[in-house]
Amino acid sequence: MQKHLTSKKLADFVRERRREVKLTQEAFAEPSGVALTVIRKIEKGKENLNLEKVNQVLKMFGHSLAPMNSRELFKNENLDK
Image (cartoon, rainbow, N blue to C red; front, side, top):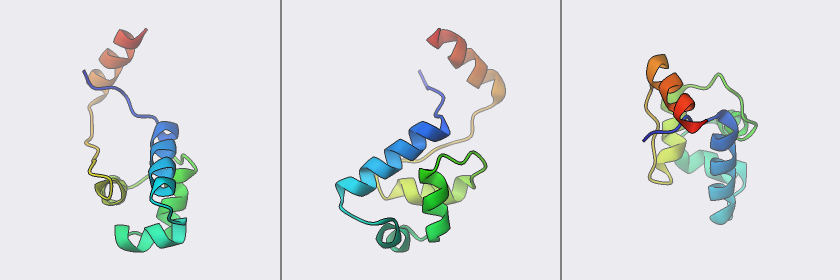
């Protein structure tokens, strides 16, 4: 079953993984191929993010995100209750 990924969970995931490899936001932005502002927005939990940019960052950890239709999202949220 897929779970809804909140921007806070995404922020925590990226921050924790980046720190595990002992990189600053600046040092991490370059090899991930995104601007420093993208890393900062992700780690602050901003909700209006470009999926392509997020996936560039997640690719560094062997992960990616895909869009989910709202019907599927609400179905999964109701199963969590």
